[in-house]
Image (cartoon, rainbow over all chains, first blue to last red; front, side, top):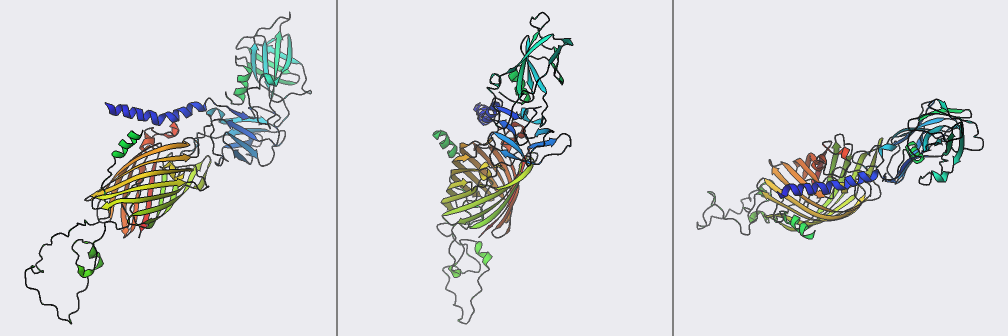
Amino acid sequence: MRTPILIAAGAFLLGAPACLVEDQAHDLERFLSPLDGQTAWPVGAPLTVYAEALDLPVDYPVDQTLRVTDVETGEELAGWVEPSTHFLRFHPNSAFESGRTYRFTVDVADGVPHGPSLGLPRELRGDTHFSTTHEVNALGVSATTPSELCVIFSRPLNDDDVGRWRLRVNDERVPRVVAKLLPASEWSSTLTFPVEDPGIDVVCIELFDVDGDAFELVEGDELDLRWGGRGPWTFPLGTTSVLDELLSLRKGAP
Amino acid sequence: MTRRLAFLLCLLPLPSLADDEPTLPVDDEPPAQEPSPDVPPADAPPADPPPADTPPADPPPADELVDWGEQSDWYGAEPLAPYAGGNVVRGIRIPSYGAGTGIEVGYMNVIGSNGGTRVGSFAARYGTERFGVQLTLPLASYRVPGSRDVGLGNLQLAGWYTLRDDSEGFLALGLELHGNLGDRAYTWAHDVREIWPGYGASVVVHARRAFGDITTLGRGAIGARTAAPYHPVVARHINLELAFALDYQLGDRVGVLGETTFSYWDLSPWDIALLGRVDLTEGLRLRAGTVLPVGVWVGFSPIAPEQQGLRELTLTADLSLSF
């Protein structure tokens, strides 16, 4: 009678540490820099994969875990990977070319057998894209109120980024919109950006009907957005917050 | 905790255990000799002394000296102590306490879908009747993401003091230390302290006893370790280890051994090892076999769940030359 109890207790004691580590890995901060679709990336800036749960030996050889490919030519860029306890950084041997789009591949599994586990969350793995062009793209939208939506742009905006806003909701033109730049403090306070990352900008747009009343949005609306000569960008309207949209683009958490 | 440890240590077959070499029983008193047809009875009149010009008989060849208790002063031979140096029966976790001075090279290869770690090791040993020390340094070739790397494992120093070594068996206390020399290899074969960067010390009780062709072996150890703090290895931990083995002598030169080890905290808390050995020449022993990480197979391991299951075993071989 005591034997099964002892076996069960032993199994629990042996298995518990592994379970604890697995759970923790999903609660810790993680992100990619640049985020998926980011533009105007500085040509000399390294690419970062940050994972608080990474737990990586600083002298562990990980050169093959991060790869960068020129999307136009298909050529893989030569570079080296800087390991640290909580992040990996890809440094190109020579600077990125300006005006190009690159694919950033994170190819770190759970660690090789008989090696460190590398607590890199699965969400960070796979391909993202970034570009050294100066173009601006809308990467995501979020409805903050029923008559306001916020648009995440692919780079910081400046005084040259002007133009008329045109928005259609389910093919119906929104008669009047008022756009304003959302201060970074309102969306980035909980996010960490490496110093080399110029970041992005968020513009929030209030929608009005012909009478000047609020134009009501509902989940699932099809949005068609244009700004000056840029766009069109189309999105289904979801219920996620700006922060959640950003976390999704940078494969981030919490 | 202390009581539990004491209980575990009590399970060890502490007394007893003999050297694996077919050492000869040495009685306090020599056994009574059967009268030989060629030997006159004691009460017989003394034989005539040989003539002075008769050359003495040649001494018997050296390999006949192995039959004990029967030796006459004629050869000037002393009764041998049980300690004879040379190789001793050992397992994978049960080391060669009591062996003579010698050197050893070993090789391990983890095969299967978890495989890729290969370890070569070199050991040098100095052994006397009472104590011995052994220094071991492994070199590992192992997988890293997308490629391979090579690095030195931990330097291991084992010292033992023989408490008992006679016809009833062998019993020794040991102290085992390991430490990283600066070159760091983040891998392991079946024993994390051998290679994964770290430091530690263990106190060991080691026993052997022969029953005819069968030798039983036991080891109990308690130690404290620090290790490079990366999952799945725990940075600081206490280690308790129990190992038991049975060796069966198949002939003068050949034997097989089965060993099971329970160890906690450990990446592989339950191992079974199966080994064969052959003495190629006197003092030169070749062993080969496998280590089955049963604890990893059945999921009693802190390694990633996707790496558990029947995905690996370790092939091992070593060559030991004892003087």
